[in-house]
Image (cartoon, rainbow, N blue to C red; front, side):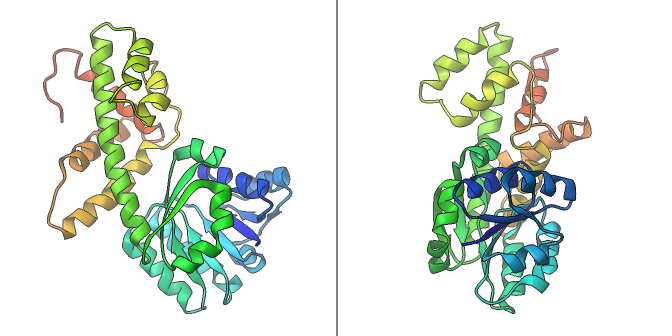
Length: 294
């Protein structure tokens, strides 16, 4: 199987490297050609001149871009290189309707489509420990199992096209709640004058222990917010969740509160920082006795 990767951000680069280790990577492409050439030179892959050229040379094409309009644009850009028997796997986080539109575009050329958003962040992409939640044909998922195994620790078929993105929405709402809880609690601990390294170690070993506390707690209490998952991108994802909730005539407090907090941080220039930068907002609650949480 020859696999190509479109999108050489932190996630796409990690996936490409792990596909290379498994002997599956054939080509890469990025909107900024220099990034693609650097990775291609490192891994001995082809730096495709455009998405269609990459699609022409590969059996499976992994796309990893930021926004809905980018996903649809890449689908159109690949068209000249796609043919029956190929499969496109989109690992971006986008709306369910965008996944269905992508599948419809490709179906005309008898090309399979899987929506396969991931969880695990930059660390998971680098270590090959991503979690894939996949919508589409179950047999196609199994056929691509070697590629999924190279990039992640699990790849679960969730149902028809769009099911992967719906599952990712569940994940992103839960991440928002964890972010709110961890940043708020640690800001309280710091304001109480505690040794925060000890707090994180003790609390992390009990019922409140979680990945975010373990991986981001030590850095956030030191005021370091190097992005693993950019705050601005989580804001985009939660906006997708809000649109889905609107169709259900429901507003979830965690979603609404987190969007409001993120917007405040983005306006202050922190949108490209890690989502743990929410800690900046929580610390302000303990300065000057501010009782307003929103």
